[in-house]
Length: 244
Ligand code: 13P
Image (cartoon, protein in one colour):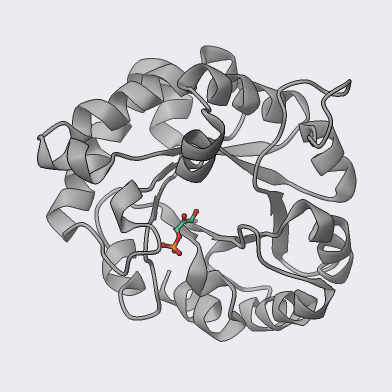
């Protein structure tokens, strides 16, 4: 079953919760996709409440690797779970770039998610310069090797392939490039996590919209989508869900 995840990033106030309700009404109990919305932490508990009894799950956008402590401003995986989250995004390129998160940081966060019973969505992706230098596949496979620690294989997790240059840019790789990346990631996942690595969905993210979702979701080994901008409008996000 494909996983369609909406990453609201630093967008969304209480007034926007109605978008989540519209998504839930449109997804329906017979949906062929798993659907998750990842609002900012301030909205997570309230969104979980309005989505109670619907098939739409709620996820976090990041977590600390420790369960509690003197980490001003941070939120732990346990806190996300307590607020109603089922999943959490870790290692998004915006966090790697803005907060210096390394593969080791991301690996620790993914294990923290596992500890709290959350399904981590671990993001990987190359820069434009890395792709132009012919290094995209090496970079993303090294990120998987560095972020997917073996204990993770005890539970469900997902990978999101998000080329940094495609995020928010209206640009996407070609279908051939996406297929090549996902095939390479599958091999790297099996090397790191065996059977769980073979089963983990590999989402594509980066300028997914209602116009390109069906084509992208039909590519071999694309197990869903991680959607940024287009997840903020219920109608656009639902169109992507229905393309799955
Ligand atoms: P866009 O869909 O806005 O390109 O964002 C993708 C993304 O970063 C999702 O995590």
